[in-house]
Amino acid sequence: MSLREPTVAATEQHYSVREVAEMWHISEATVRRMFQNEPGVLPISMPQLVRNRKHRPHVLLRIPASVLARVHQDRSRGFGLEVQPRRGRVK
Image 1 (cartoon, rainbow, N blue to C red):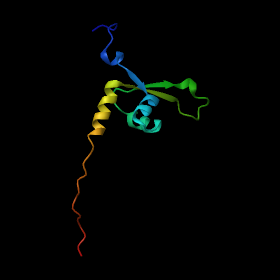
Image 2 (image 1 turned 90 degrees about the vertical axis):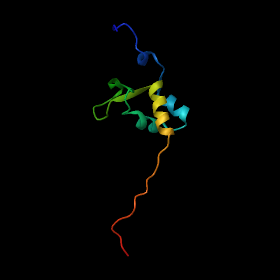
Image 3 (image 1 turned 30 degrees about the horizontal axis):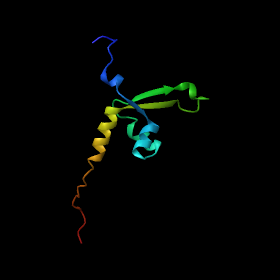
């Protein structure tokens, strides 16, 4: 594969945090927390948006459609709670 050939990941649809928040009817802060460490998400640093050194650089997230689908599938499976027997308390 040469450097000029686009990969599927590079050419697939990418979504902003705002777009995902609107699609899923959740807050942008929740989307950011859900995807900030997710493999495949593109963090784009915007240091020019920082006015002074006391603030952290602004980071835009671009979420590929495949990552969005994977996270949605993982989260929509639900989860199970295992009830552990209590130990140590005897009456």
